[in-house]
Length: 156
Image (cartoon, rainbow, N blue to C red; front, side, top):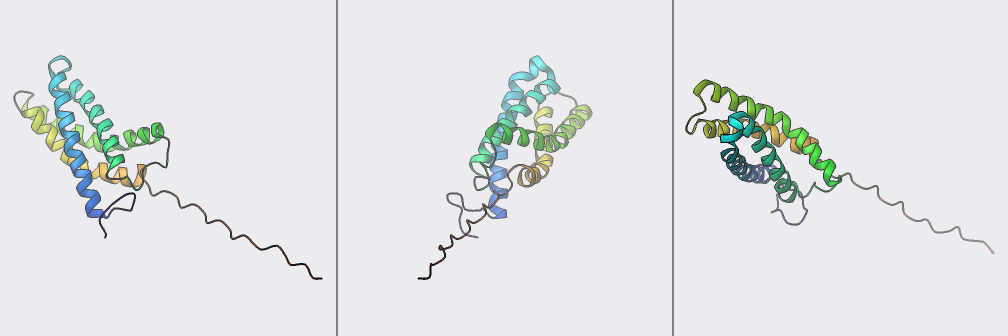
């Protein structure tokens, strides 16, 4: 497929790469917020807030890059709401793995961050499918205008 410019459709490989790169940014946002909050909110409460921050960040970036050829079909608040809901499925996988690993290995040292990475990778495939099929669907093609018919000719 041709390189992506403007709003031309993006090929699957390009979409996966872009989604992954946005996910890396989301991971760092997630980890930074978790690092700021883990002392006061604990590893679970801090993770819930850090996940929300990562969802907001990745929505904005995916909208502008990964799905730019599909974004804009909904009002921003509606699209963000749908994205947040769609990410909950991947988030459940992500958080479940995180919680299982922290529960099994404790919350000391790098464990919460390693668990964060494992959960993030596991949730990525679920999130990509949810974003692709539930949030950033192809814009509906506008029906073509019916050709104008010439007025009937009058016979003299």
